[in-house]
Image (cartoon, rainbow, N blue to C red):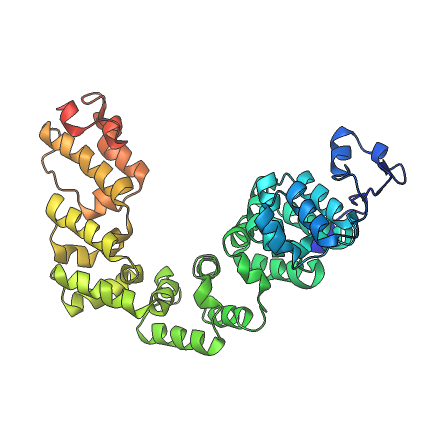
Length: 393
């Protein structure tokens, strides 16, 4: 079904206008109590008095929740001739469960939304975002930071962008991820940079999952001018990366990163005794090892070498472990193995890269925790960081 066909003619917003404090057209009674709330008048006036600036400021403070200072600034950019549209806009936002703080943020960031056409623009856009699976909670949160998403043209902007993103990432869940975390991309001319770049990587035979990662996680690079993006792709190809592997798009991301970050990573590895060959080899295996912070690298290398006793050069052969979390992976697993070794339940304390660190959590729990729970009942709590090692010895 085409995205625009999801809207039913029966799902139309009823704008209820007030005259002398009463709704015109008798439409409010058409809805139940919840729907009537949607059509509730927010202010007792339908027209702004002669002293327009003061009245606009008053409306922004009393109805939109702005501070007097912010309201004064906003009043310079939007002039309310009538309360008809502003009241309808605020009613719509409240119906979609925007909090007062979120409404205030929306108005401050996009004052002219108060003059938007609710029936023709705002409501259809909100309906569409919800129709692809975005909850009202996340919708309000996203739009309060990016209110311009409500003012885009559904036909010319939102639906074409959605259709293209869906063709790349397949699932609505990932489209929602883009909407929430990369919303700026909806404002771009997709045919200028993004579409040609996606077509290029498709021609290279890069798997769909990797292209989706490129769009959702490495958005900045795939939005660059096709000339620059093509150069990066060519460079990665010349370095021998296989387009069929995840490392190909990771290498594109790494090469696009800041040169200062790259040099900083090189300096850290040299401090730990890596040669240039070690660094090049590590990059070929795990390109992301060249886009990490100095603090992250130093902390991880220190733990692996000085706490776990690994050789620095050994880590160079398995650089993917550098991306693992100290707090979530290394320390919990090291603590478990330490307890087992000190209790004489295993012969070697060192965790191997193959079985101790790189394997999944399920594998580790089955191999090192669950099988020893009868001898060490608190072992799972050690793994979860709830019990110190010395408390179980």
